[in-house]
Image 1 (cartoon, rainbow, N blue to C red):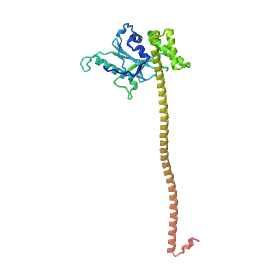
Image 2 (image 1 turned 135 degrees about the vertical axis):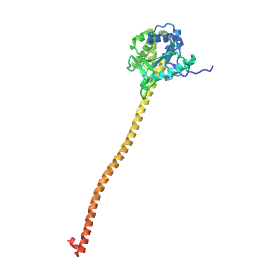
Image 3 (image 1 turned 180 degrees about the horizontal axis):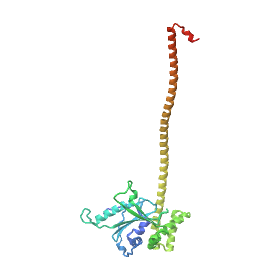
Length: 316
């Protein structure tokens, strides 16, 4: 079989919840979110799509359990477009499921397919509510359509959704680790130093202790890479926005100048026509009066001549 070279890295979130060796973490997360109490982690069947990669690393986990198709995505920057991403993701998941189970889409019988559930776990710094629902229909350009997809967004930062966080020790530990890194960065530490100290402190406090002890170097590398690339992407987004504003200003200035020039030219034509017309009427009246006087003079002189009177009397 040909081998496929992986061109991405798993994020720490995927490493914690999306690996075969960490099925127990995935089951724990499922139980916390669904309020269930499954204990057999072998029922977790991972089906994550490798092609959905963001900033060079994979940040999503999907698995089947209890007739449900679960999709989780770690999110650091709020985006209203997640339902669209979910639609595209589930389309691939169901295509794969139909193929693997040899389901007949064109048969007369009703198919039984897993219930899709899409949960976005928000770890960003924005002030987001504990829970919100985003809908695909909110993105439709011309009103309601014939398909709907929703994404449940949970704020998983420390102090938020405590019932869920307390039900998943791994998720709570992950949130604490991220909060420690940000706190140390806020105190002036560079990113690498902040990651190193946060990992060491979590191990010392017994938070994700077994995982971080066994995967210390890998976890530090994933955290550093993820935080660095997200920061680089944020800088890139700001640069693009700044360039767009500058380009918009330039185009607006040029367009405004052109429109103003055209408007001024048109106004100048109108004003010139009006003033020229007025001046022309004035000059026409003056010339008409002069011509009328001259014509009347000629008529009088002719009449005098006909009467035998010397026209020179007019000069007297």
